[in-house]
Length: 421
Image (cartoon, rainbow, N blue to C red; front, side, top):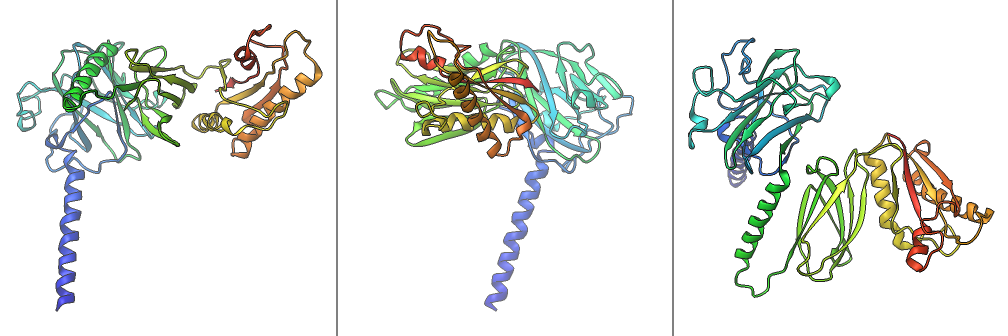
């Protein structure tokens, strides 16, 4: 009897747990369960299987440019605009053959939006795009300032609709739908003109909030912000950050465009930053009281001919053996090669040889050191065809007459050059 009672209890727990999970997964396919987008980047990994509990978009004709004919495999999102500006966005599929359509609504109902009819006789979207996906553009869609149409109907057409002018604090609902089952998820990237103006306000609000939380503490710890952005557009980029110095004998790893942590005066951090399609960044930063509290890591897109100096690559004397402190820089280079599997590079070895010709021993030493880096990559399964090694001896010194140890060290370096993407 006890066994039967226990089995029944387990069955009911499993039944209700599975139902709860099912309802949670389904709710985001309904307006009432819309997911909040609180940053400029939102990654949707899972694929939704249905239109949810309520079919909210339905009954439109195939020629209606404002609406889908109906929801098929959909998800709803809600966001509040961060400032008064021009808003664009991109929906970027993880699988290039997946086709996503969208409707964008502005909520002017003061809280009853999800209960209102969304059809030609009810609430109309302010933007839509139902065009066929364009494989040449990696099946992206969204809003852009270059587009001319507010609505794009079904069929072959511009996969982008026109950007919108927004005011700070407005509420928008975005519904993304696929007419057929998909293989992957997608990323939603919001683009605000004057993004850094918003970030400045956001940072002030966040710092005020932090101060309020610790108002009972006499001297709160300062907060250091790391912001990763595109060097040209200044828009945020999701990147892999590896930071040493926050915790003793530990590297903190984060996948984000914005990372914050408490710091202290004269605390030093080493930061490695990698993002797909970008040259990596390896830097060192020391925090000083009452100086800047935001560190901008600007990443440049990979470009043929670009060079990066591998900081912190050290060798034994006139040898080719790496010193242990070279390991983080080597690992960062390896991460870059793995994240950009089609990129080919040249490892360039240089030595310090002031007031001297480019002797054979200089060339041999620099060649062997470049090969040592090449071998580190190939041992870790980077194809040898992607990595060329060449020693330049002392022919490309930065300081031809070094005046101190720092300048001599700068001459004694290893660089990588992009050969092809």
